[in-house]
Image (tube, rainbow, N blue to C red):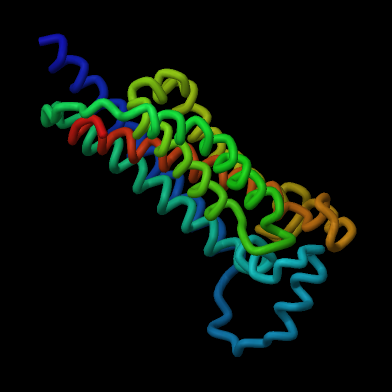
Length: 244
């Protein structure tokens, strides 16, 4: 009985979050489309994109495009990823089914290897995020790299131990708080009498770590979002299938 009540409560909470997420995504898309309008397809102008990168103060032309001139596309990708994460949590977290799979204790070699590799993997993920506006990388790549390190630790120690250290309630709130921060930064120029999705921050000196305007902030928030959401997805699959 207690299990059924818990599942029902989790189902209602997930349903409310799903409705809120869909409404948030729809409202954001409508506001941006009405604000920006659509002028039809334009021919590719390589020189224009290079100028965009120079104006943003980012030496990584790719990041200056998808976090600058094409920010709308990137925001939609983040929202799709967020909705997908919510779908996994809603579908696998409320079915009340978990196949019992015998856990095989990992050897000391695996545990020691995970302990040794986890810090460098996390550091590499942070580096890829922090320097995403200066060199190849960014929030998506860095977030996945860091999440792979966390998954390595889960293989060695078990997902329950890792999840307990991450504090699921705090993780859940922080995950959606980061998404709200991304949307807030994207719409912040409008109240400042600037074009929607433009960069409200100065570009800084090109080539330095503190440059690129809002691009490093977007990279950092996207990296955190991808990192946390990747763990949520992996944890729910493990809860449904059995310990890895």
